[in-house]
Image (cartoon, rainbow, N blue to C red; front, side):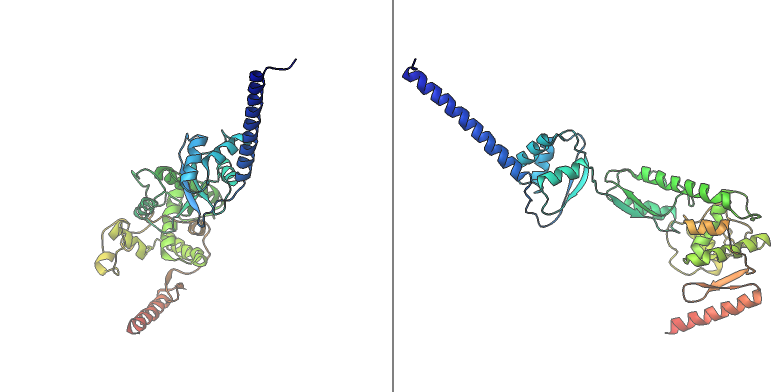
Length: 334
């Protein structure tokens, strides 16, 4: 039985509409699928911070505004099709030029968050570390208090934007605790100090006396010899710390008045070790103090080439000092 004309027209309209909708869906699917694999046109990387709690559409809009993707719908739908809508992680990301929406999704899904770094040099003071951390703009929070010298381990630390300065300080403290726990049990016998704290004090002096790692066991050996003989350490860096408190460089040579200062850190006036470390020290200095070189030397002075010359007698040392002063005078004249 043939359908009446109005019904035929309605059926044709319904079928045509279905065909159009299906065709549009297929075209849309093809468009999304193709563009999900299409590279952007950026010529430089883009850095983007994705806030915690951001949904797929919020991330898509942020990527679009930054130029990482050229259609936020392509990214959002592509993530949904991939089944990773709940796997995108907050954080700071760098997206290279030519990245596709799929690659951008994988970067975020894998949590390839930007890592920043701050290098704490060996031999710095607590005030120096405070300034370094304050200048690290990706860190968050204030530094209420820096632990005293000797408590933190100088090295390069990696962190993520928003990590707190306080947490980074705690990591430095934990690093020094681990280092001491590793090295202290293997120390030499009959050392002229009894505690890890005393070892840190002497190691901080060795750290400041020489920048040459190869010299540190010998410098440590000299100070160990002097402690055993109840001689004053007579270390210039301890006097510098007595004068400045480690707050800033002295900015001038030490004077006779400095050497005569009545401070417990002045090892020209007081025998034994200072009351606490004068700097934050590294592995080599601590290892040198715990296993110093066996040497007859009791003195050392700069040799003009970045190292030191060592002597077992005062007469020999005085000759070395005279040689060093002549070299200084020659350099000043030149």
